[in-house]
Image (cartoon, rainbow, N blue to C red; front, side):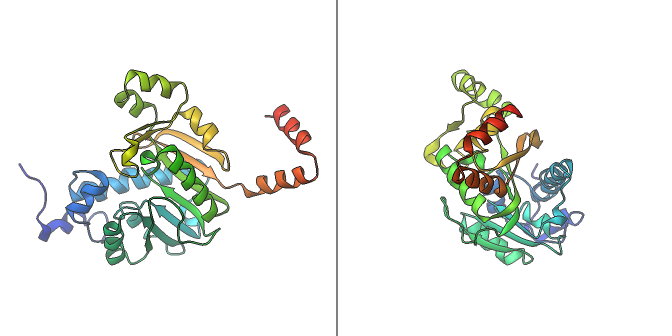
Length: 268
């Protein structure tokens, strides 16, 4: 039995969620795979969006405190649409698929949207956003592209701003990796499948917790790591602690790096 609504009554499915238009099936399929419009919007709010709110609250943060939010890899606005209530916050979205961005521009007028390329840079000045969300984006990057985007997102974050990304962790690795690759994952190694399709759904990346706590904190401070915090994906909350970099730079210039490292090792 086909339970999908006709184009004429699609919006009737989500009157209890919001008053915004629903993307066409073609675009929904590109973002999340086959899904009826009600699930796309309703579950997007009740699971995906609410998980962001919950993770922030766990760390005594709130969406309402941010001045500028970027939905990086926004697709056709599954998360962005739920930022509409933030009347005092500027909302931005970016994606490398121009069809998705065009739909967002035409149907989500409260936010500003841009098309980005598969690799950096973004067309924003440095220190633009105090919160960036990237849901199910780093799950489709190679390691090289991952670090390139981490550097770029660090650039456009305000000092002490937050970056929240989601990753494939233990449940996905256990269910989908071969025994050989799963053993590498368990040893703390980053795993990527079908790297030739980087940026698309066939390319799948897996991030062990050990890797997250070391490799992803080269510039960022790790504020929180929440296994399965975004449905089955893990949430990684990072902060741009610019003062640390400036402090270390000053200490290096003053010839005191050895003392700083000795102190940090002793008090870690």
